[in-house]
Amino acid sequence: MRNRLRSTIKWGGTVLTVLLLVVWVGSGWWWCNFTPRSASYATAIDRGTLAVKWVKPAPTLPDKYLGWHMGWNRPFRFSWWFRSESGTVVRGGNATEVVVPLWLGVLIFGLPTTILWYRDRRKPLRVCRKCAYDLRGNTSGVCPECGAGFDEPHP
Ligand SMILES: [Zn+2]
Image (cartoon, rainbow, N blue to C red; front, side):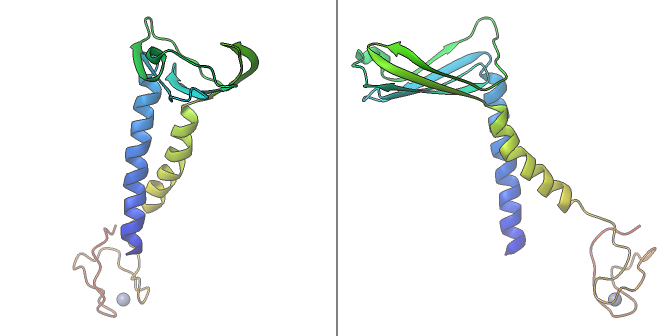
């Protein structure tokens, strides 16, 4: 059961990391943003970053600015670092914007996943797990000393 959970985390982490990697690199070519009906904040994925913007008081925006939007960056554009900006005025409201590079997400999910994979790589079994009898050269799959079976590779 523990092994199963570990395997789920490992594979889940791998899928998430690959997905984030694709979004990160891909967002150099395309952007997408979302603004809720209240327009009190807006989020965008663009140029390898995730940007969140808060506006106080929330402006009244025409319908065409609300919801999801997507588009292409031509040419490819990329931003690598954190950025924050406040004090700008957006339609009469005070805007604060925080920009986080998406490689941070790749790192947060990718690093522990990599460590899990690295730790779980199969090591050649040199001695019996049960009695520590030397198993080098043994191809029978059974410990001759205590009779315990093993299916791990051995040198
Ligand atoms: Zn043994």
